[in-house]
Image (cartoon, rainbow, N blue to C red; front, side):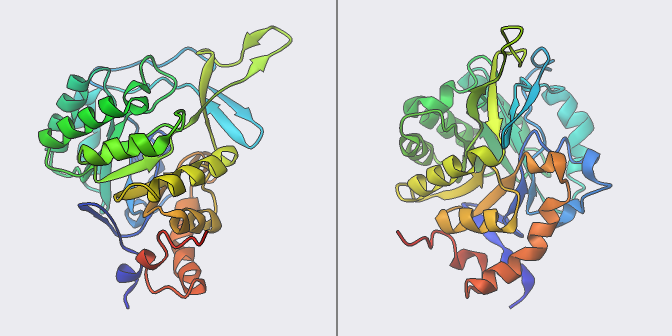
Length: 305
């Protein structure tokens, strides 16, 4: 069996050469990483989330290190869709790997307009709907209400031809209910999880450390939450899952795959170890053989409980 056959995986209509993706917001527009990462080897690249209009983001501080994690409140700082299409997409489409574009809207109509405009561009492999950003006003609204989630997913799927991935928040009572709504709306996959709402304080000055007050916690601290969410959704919904949250080693990758994910995204680890993604790809065949598996699909959802 070839390496391509062993490592390839499917997210609904989207086929990836391997399950190692990089999370939106942690890899720039990929151009910034090309001198340190062999980008074409990745299963997929997700550039930073784009919005209809440019956003300057939140006031500083925007990031705060915590025990076993990172709090961020960037606020979706980006150049807007026009600049993305003109300046960034031409480079991204030259990469020899899948390009999944993350979009965020303030309303359903904005999501639909972004998906229609970006999703029908050459070189875009899929759209990730950022329904779950905790550090912008209204950022989690569509990811916490099942009816709204289904409506946005269904409308964006009708607006563009490429696969739709719905990125969901863990800041809900039952994430499986929201994932089912995304599936009912036609999502090819759900991405679990976005950051966990958190806060850090400067007790001496009696002020929040983040300029936004609260932000999203990522990194190793949230991995057990993310795996729990992947397992719960895999047990309830019959669509592909992308696991996200604290992934930094090949063991982390395998834990998510066994729990039910068909692919993973590396986020916070990109900041302190930008070459970790390609090392995971190198390590994946041996990890599969250790599980007596011939291909990635053999281990997905194989957890025995």
